[in-house]
Image (cartoon, rainbow, N blue to C red):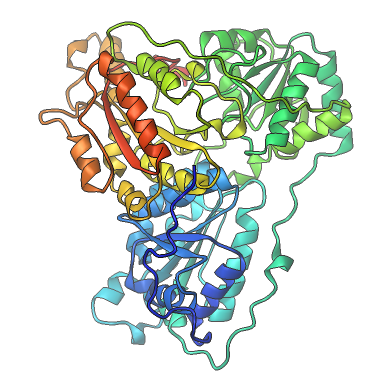
Length: 588
């Protein structure tokens, strides 16, 4: 599906004709040389110099500015873009206030191990240059301290030349495994400083990211020996790139070992979910079938699995011995003392200090396994039956509507029935947001759809109503820049996950479960999601409330997006989950 030609959107009257004469021109020039395609931003006076450089020096091309309505969306769009493209775009954050707005989205990108280049700014560091009032409240000492625990690196350069070096260093770091965001704070005075002569921008090809680390041959041989001696090997297929070659190699490795494979919904598609070796439907938490298979394993290959120790504890009886474990990950390079996204320390008999993709390739080489490249043909999905419009019915109906289209599912809500949607290639599904908050879905969907343009794929995001409502204004950016996207809102009119928590609390304390809904429901009045979406420029019909309406509504939505539309479909579903969710916090 081809994307829109947006070269005429917000085209400068007379851009790209002035010599580099200002500090911010140097920053813009290095962004162009790095081939940064877009910068998503909310306009702000703290980087007015950079904005002028992007428009009047570069002509608003590579990078092109994408106007957003909230800084959290700016970073979320860059996050979604990187999940598809495998490389960063930029996000602009206005001063300390914009950085505070964006902080949740930055945390998401960090937890999701995704590269984002964030360019912020501060009022003049020199107090004598500050305007009354506004420059004082928008200037902070050590602004990067606001997000330092959840970025790979931050800097506040003190000259235009130093700013160029900062951008080059940040670009290296965010694209070195494991990936993550970086934040650069530009002094407004340095941006607006007149240059005596244009700065010489270094050859950016000499500042490429470091190559991915490779595990030692001794460790690879030890891992291969353990796996080939196993009678019940299990592969935990976690974080992975969108590489089709590694996808094929992973299938070949599992087949050669006879290993059962478990995936989850927090990461993107990492193994075909309808392959005979795949166990159950992927979800946020292990299903009963997955726990049983993991409990019987004698050797486990963990490929950058999120919370390995938590999964082992869920599956093994208390006091039971662990299976032999081969753990391939670089995630311990991101451990710090602020957040616990490193999870409990897992045991390992062999540690492969490399990314999961590299581990798959090394193991295939060691075992002389050749990947086969075979096209997967998904069977015709069966139309759902019944009169209950719930998550399971929505999933089955969507499988029918999308069949025959090359589809990328960007997001799914909690409790989604993933097993009915075929994940048969790396771009089939992009995974969660990393930080597991609310409100990231629309921005991530817009960014992913932007990066999917030209790949002839149908971008679909199924979002919960709370997630959509909180981040809905990100939809305007997609409308303004003509980005095709289908957003389906699974609307149970509740923060339902918290209803289940309140029910569990009531049961544990012997109190009435009938009160679980209080403080959780999104009704009286219900949010008019269709009207909200239309107000931001999307096509959005009346809500679907009956099972008989759904198939036709989905077919119409798919057709509209295939023709280049931005489309939001509100589907009123019964509250409940279709896949494994924990009964209490003890099971997470």
